[in-house]
Image 1 (cartoon, helix red, strand yellow):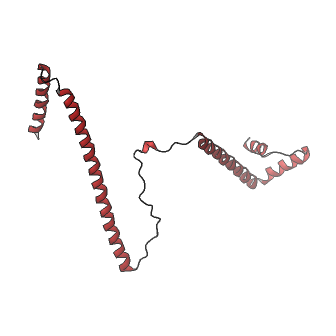
Image 2 (cartoon, helix red, strand yellow):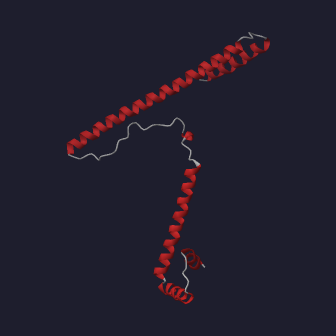
Image 3 (cartoon, one colour):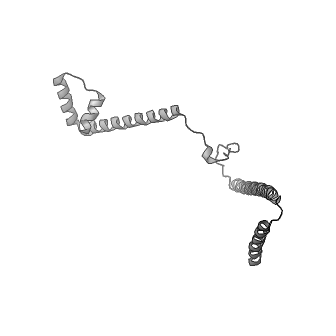
Length: 160
């Protein structure tokens, strides 16, 4: 291993000296082409290795499922029914997911506001159930003033 590293270091320095002395001027284009070709080969090797890995895991899972089925058959166990999706599609890049439109964002914000309003109304109703005397005082006050209160006024009154 040390010999390999030493050879790489000396070889790189030697090629740098050759280039400085005035070796072939046409090697730069060839070097770029070689580097691009090596990069393509490297990417292809990575892709092939990934495919082999996925195939290996798929085969292992098939073997496991066969073993599970044998056990189920042996002990008369029913298989849990699952909805099997047909080969889930993998996005090439998780950062390239579908972005929400302004209309979708506005609809989500409106839904959150409605949820907040519902939560506030629920709190008001709980308060009125737990504090009936306070609620009766408010009703008597409303009868005296002969005006109706809106839900907003009730909420504001409860919040003090």
